Amino acid sequence: MPEISVVIPAYNAAGMIGACMVALRAQRLPPQDFEVVVVDDGSTDGTASRAAALGARVIRVVRGGPPAARNVGIEAARGTWIAFTDADCIPSSVWLARLLSAAQRNKGGLGVAGKTIGYRSSTPAARFVDLTGGLDSESYLRHPVYPFAPTCNVMYQREDLRRIGGFDARIWHEGCDIALRMRREFGSALIHEPSAIMLHRHRASWREYFRQQRGYGKFHAQFMLKWRQEMRWSLRHELLAWGELARVAIRVVPATPEASLLRRGQLVRGLAQRLGFIGAYWNPLERSRWAPTDRKHAGGSQRALSTLEVQS
Image (cartoon, rainbow, N blue to C red; front, side, top):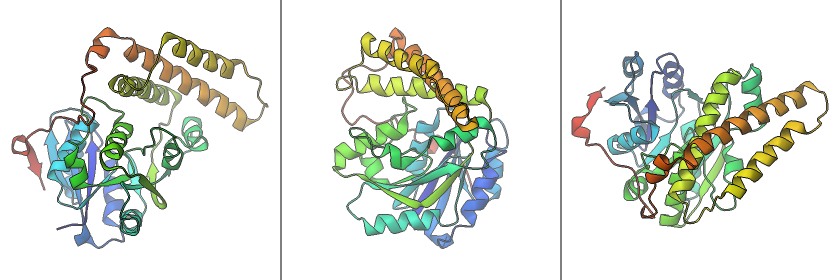
């Protein structure tokens, strides 16, 4: 049995998943020690065939979103550990070996999170993400109340994930939600391993970045609605958030290219996230999906593997 199962949700990623798979085939960990499970989340292109041709065990499902696809991967996985990444990522050759080594050194840890940096970040939008550490798990793990790691570079024990019911398939801010539920169930913390490096293709244009960040705002609202019994948010909080964004807009900054880039990126990100947030948080239909009776450890629904098409 493999030590690690790499689970990758993928949707219309035929143009990117090849680089991810090639990098996984080049891992320094012995091939028998890991497997790759790609969950093709309703793609209409050649994602499944491309991944299968490069050695992945492919499971095809009806489009349900990344958290639901990760749950299918958890159920299909055979490894003791499950390492999550995405189709637009490229792991370094030592990624899995460093994750596993860190887990073995810290047996009481909840799991391991690596370091994620940009891949060929040549456009202004992509460079802004790198400058601000947009996927920096070390930064997120320092949060005093809700530390978490992005799901593009994190590893948990399979049985721990199964015990809490996997990801909540309703919420696409799944990295924070799963970390919170895991920590409360097992009482330990994620370990940061900076040598487990993952390259990520950041959004290349401001338009793409705006659309992504608007989605992040919506997903953040969903997370807060699910846990609203402990995360209070009022109209006063919302007005203060808009006030802070206005201060960023009118703040005088040095006229250097880097300062201008940071200013523009902060405004794009802030505006997009606020629009996404208010569109979900104050929406009666969205709020009705997150009843206060949600159980503390509620996870996502699992789809029976017998109904899925498996491609190997």
